[in-house]
Length: 251
Ligand code: 13P
Image 1 (spheres, rainbow, N blue to C red):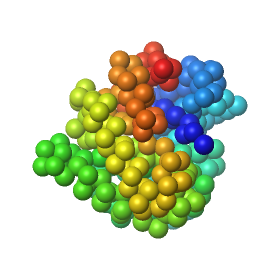
Image 2: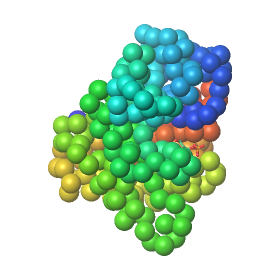
Image 3: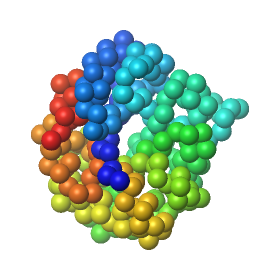
């Protein structure tokens, strides 16, 4: 079964409710028109409800930017998977490098989030990536292997088929420095090989691996033409209709 490309927009800490609804309403018909690919937007928590309501009935997926592993309780500042289900949010970005670096989320915590999401039927968009320092020290593959081993601990083969992996080299996020298509493809092929070794060939073939880090209308076509790049996780360029819709329409 061919992997269906997924173009995901991570709005990070941007956009008011009104701006988010306007953008999502513009994007919904584009997502509907391009049925050979999936499109997702991840608004900040404040806009999730309004955005899901605004795009109801369209194919545009709405995701969250994080999710807790517990259903409810004393977890100040967290959002539970059940609360997301209540809003018909079907996907959750987990382990973004900004969560890891700025907010100190560990592989262990990220693993709990992934397992919690899966338990409640949410598709985890599990993010991994090396820093510039790690790349320059030739540690890229070691770091990614560690993040995958620890972050996906306890995920079984069946569950793994619904997990989306997003490779986002930290040095390419918000910097305008995209990994070259060759650099990205090399890492994506490595990740797929690792999935085959850790799970099996079938899982490796089915799991979608997105690239993120300065994806723009100008570079999306070349990235998407790589055999192991199955989509994009877009930050800055996902905040405007013109640029994000062009990215959705990659050829
Ligand atoms: P930019 O596209 O702004 O580099 O951000 C990438 C990203 O972090 C998406 O999650």
